Amino acid sequence: MLNLIKKDLILQKTFLPAYLLFLVTYLWAGMDVAYVIIICSAVFVINTYQSDDKDNANILVNSLPYTRKEIISSKYVGTLFFTIVIIPFCLVGKYFILDSMEFQLSLESYILGFLAVMLITAFYIPFFVAFKVKTLVPVFIFLSIGVIYLMRNTPYLLNKYANGVLTFLKEISNLKLFLIFAVIAVGCYGVSWILSIRIYQNKAL
Image (tube, rainbow, N blue to C red):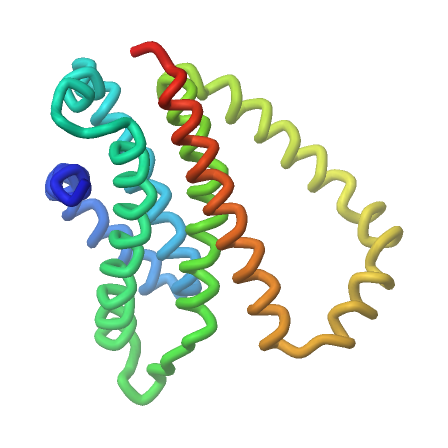
């Protein structure tokens, strides 16, 4: 499985200048580090599956002495490893882009970004396993329509549920919120991992 992770990471060498340009641009623009981590990691996931779809590389991988469980597990482990690697780059970039006197290490942003990557990856990978990347366009269009619908109805939803949400948030500390979010993220990641393995084991290449 380690060689599969290495393969996915080596493929990212082509995109390294784009990653660095994106990182510098958005940190310079003042974007929160959590968003930079999330977007870079999401691009990593998409790139790995695009590479597998290209020239039927996934068929070649399956001809190697790896189980389908190992192939899927390498995607989940590789994404977390890539995210961990991105974090120091964000730290260094933020330090040099900002005035060193203004630099502040916000541990919460990095933890939040990492957990958000877990949630997003948990959602994305089962779709990439079940379908080819090109066939996912209609799915994302449907999701975009759903997001637009939610945005248009945000005032109504806030009026209906805001009081209950605010009361709940006032009653718990930031630490408890992080712990709740962490449990949800790890739980979703684990369920997604198992689901993706089962989908891939039953999938005809």
